[in-house]
Length: 322
Image 1 (cartoon, helix red, strand yellow):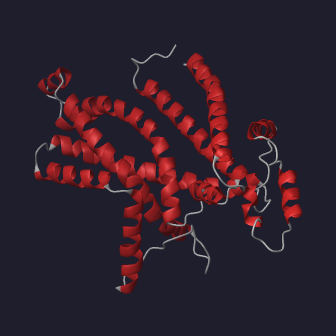
Image 2 (cartoon, one colour; image 1 turned 30 degrees about the horizontal axis):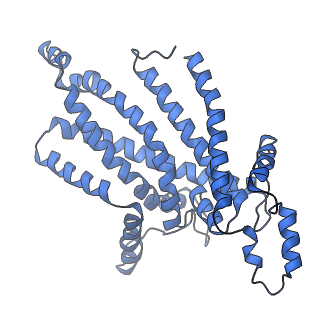
């Protein structure tokens, strides 16, 4: 296992270098510049704009600027924003914890519900419960996150407030009008986490159901039943343990979807995380913040896949990496 981990960790380095080069080229080759905001500003003279371009190094070729950026990053310097000149690391420090909380909450929400629902659906095959689960999960899996988020805002925020019911907040991570306690932050997290996790919940439920149906038809399950073991013991100790192994890999592969979905969900709900920071910086052509935010998402994705591979080997003793 140690040799495998070493190889994977060493392999992350060229992978992230390749991603950084591609993303930096893409950001700098699209139309627009961080100094476009000064073009029609009557208080900024053309020579002042040229001086700003020179000070930011934007007059150099993009590939030369990439190696300057990479050298600074390797020294721990992420630079400053091209728009407001604030430190990039400060912007990331404010946004990253919010995205991690949202993603982990969505992951736990989807995982803790999909496993028992999928097992019950497989055990009660072709029952009313199974058919209802199939219809509901198919519907939620097909709904775009942006549409679902707007629908939840209309129902649980706007309409609930109009009907006099307790309503949920629509943006931010806390209420600025008073003291922000734990439950206030939970209320701000409910709608974004549900929107981000519902697609994974639907997909994982269907996957657990299919995996359980495949396992419970195996010979070793019939052997366990013939020995007189209780049905609950057969399902949980034998069937579920084997059906869970492919789910571990599936969860690892869908971690990128969680961070990718955060780009949409955070902007729908005005949630100040990495996703909203990325979209805002892209709209403003703020290359430095956009690069840092995208690389953070790439790093989290790579680490998530690595964790999934390691857990697969831990849970299945038949898997050997060395």
